[in-house]
Image 1 (cartoon, rainbow, N blue to C red):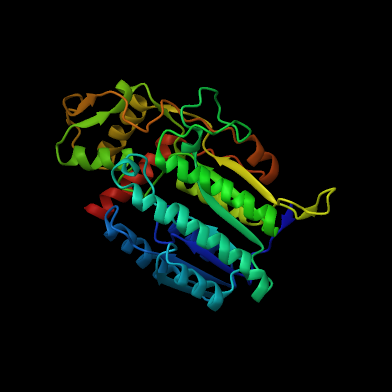
Image 2: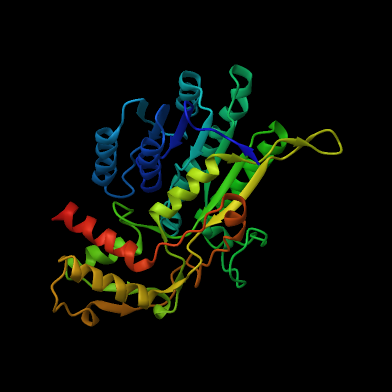
Length: 357
């Protein structure tokens, strides 16, 4: 592994108004005394843009002395915009978190996934390749993949050694394509690349399309929540701070460049899971969530949860279980996510109460 120092470097974070992206930028502000941090996000209305704007305002208020911070409203699917970004700022480390997220939405609006997740990522790879022609180039490209690539894999926990050639959603297929594209560019152009398969990320100021957030919204409005697969699904919920800790550690350790017996580059390429390695049953998850919503004063103590729950069948694109094998992450970076679900949902409930009043 090649150690990558972040101090004094230019770091590009795509999707920087997103849930993981904004929290990563915040963490870089805390960790570094001198650096240039560049963020890009298209601010699309897939979910409430007010939350993205809230994250950006928070970042503006937190920016410390010594950090040169730039936010650009732009789309990585716009090749000219990405070229201009690399030409102006010359990033040494790139973290690609920009993507159209969501399994179910990929069924109703597939175009958005091809534009952002395939064309957008191709643009990032191309500019990384050309960076070596105009300056010292990108030292490490870290990119977001997803636990969705495992599809309906019945072997658990999910290992990065598992075959993942049977996606059950277009979203999963685009994320697997990212891994394949990155591997090809890593082999052809010796670009150090690390893909991270995230497992059900949650926490304060998260994505409103995620179950914990959507359930809360519906319960507050007195609506009924639907629990898929009749409540027998299991999810490896991973708290946002654990995700960011993993990303920051991976950023600082790139796959080593070396030559094979044929004199050609051995692709400096790795993929890791970042998950809590502790799947929770959805009914248990909902029970903990409702307890924390009452404790935070979002819902009254006498709220009739049973009257607002409905067990329904599995939805297209969903899988019955997600479960991360994080042994390689722990071995190579000395880190294993461990935030308990209750602690994470408590932090979310307190944020929700403050944000929505």
